[in-house]
Image 1 (cartoon, rainbow, N blue to C red):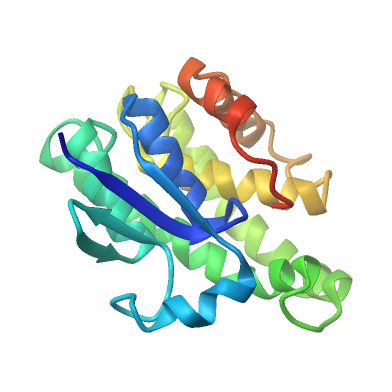
Image 2 (tube, one colour; image 1 turned 90 degrees about the vertical axis):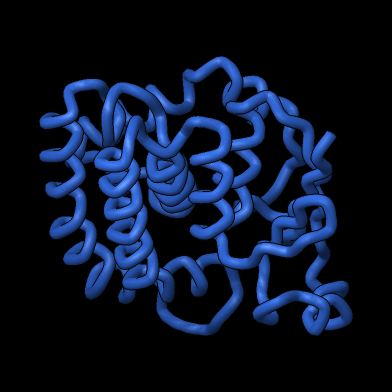
Length: 206
């Protein structure tokens, strides 16, 4: 039996969509959660000096999107056929671009950096959100399934869901203008395997 080990910080973060892929697939994995003070000693042992890192029988794969893509394709959560897989990849890249653009707000709110979170939200996040979310709404309507691509949840849905859940923790009004995003969030949350995972996962601040 293949042994999977995921190493990431103690919080949900970029490791959470990967953990959820395992939950969806019903595949056991070692969930190695690292405290901040432990990270400096581990950093040099990682391929790129960052986390998450997936180990598959001891072989290390870095980068959250590469890990999710690998597991998504392996377990059937990456789209049906080459075209859907390419669409899932495209949406994952677009979601990542958006998350990068609003990351300073997250870092301020989470205490990872010093800055004016309210100003960042009003000056940067709102504009970026109101550019990106209409694209998501359009795609959800075109897909017609409640998911981003095809008729089955994909790893791109999980990354979008993780981002929305995280920001709702900081700004409960984050998706008030976008009921379609709220419906997507609920649809993913209500998947039985994910509901079970969320109810049992370790408590984390974000």
